[in-house]
Length: 77
Image (tube, rainbow, N blue to C red; front, top):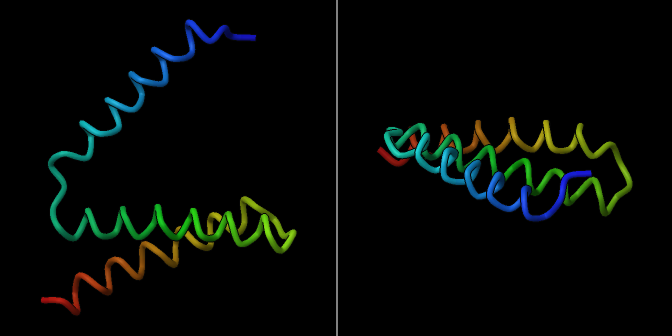
């Protein structure tokens, strides 16, 4: 098992890399990414509560959220 002294800097580094990778996204890309992340979270939480397949709920929620973010971006213009 990996110790906490090693895991914390590794996780912090992954967070920094993830945030830097998102810095040059267009407005549409930001909305699709945000919608997908929110949808995946909601899908996961819903399937945890209802007792369904968690990975399936996350996948369906992520796709629905990404589509919603894209549609919202197109309608707002």
